[in-house]
Length: 292
Image 1 (spheres, rainbow, N blue to C red):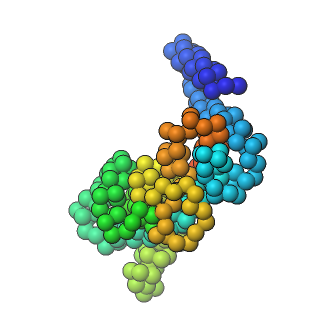
Image 2 (image 1 turned 90 degrees about the vertical axis):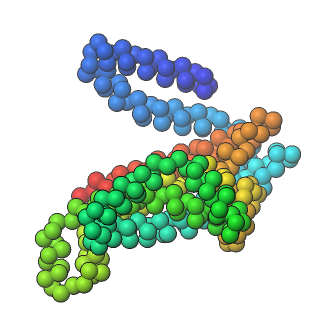
Image 3 (image 1 turned 45 degrees about the vertical axis):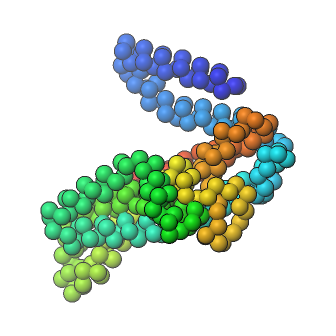
């Protein structure tokens, strides 16, 4: 099934759902509720169909090779996969540490007025378009660190911290007062009490971290502006080297994809991996947040 056919099918589905919504509310609501999984399924189908030429031509070397050459029509995603892994592995612990520290400071240390202001400010930073972060990184951060995996990691940590902080802060604030009073009655310090409360909300902490992870894996615009953009970077532990992530590879190479026969299918395979990873990570985050 072609992409055009899928788009037409979804349009007809949406039109019928809206018609039923205004004529028979219950049936319309059921169809509209199924629209989200239908969109996801359509996206996966389009990516899979588009990736088949590259998968059949390259085989496993599509994921085990770091060579990216449009002139030779050889494409490997290993460099992008490694770039995604290493930037996330550096950014996530930094973001988790800042988010946990923020939650403890806001709830246990900051005065009430400052607490409200800091919470509102952190929530607002999550709404800032990532291109703004990218411009800041390109104009300021790269004066001290060259465009590289390290620059992308630090910028990514700044972007995802508000998402983790919002979840962890709310979880920390929901700890019953009786638990804190019991801990303090045993002579615990504020630091020890904070550790006990963090253990109590460990599902919130893990859920917030996983939400930040999903955000980090899919971040495109800001990372593309500071990562260096070398699609053949390969596997390297040198964080100061130029690299690329899966999402930035798609953004940087897609404008040139139509000039070749197999670049677009390779990018479709990258998009399929990205979609699968995002769905799995966000599903894990939701499970942890609602786990009793």
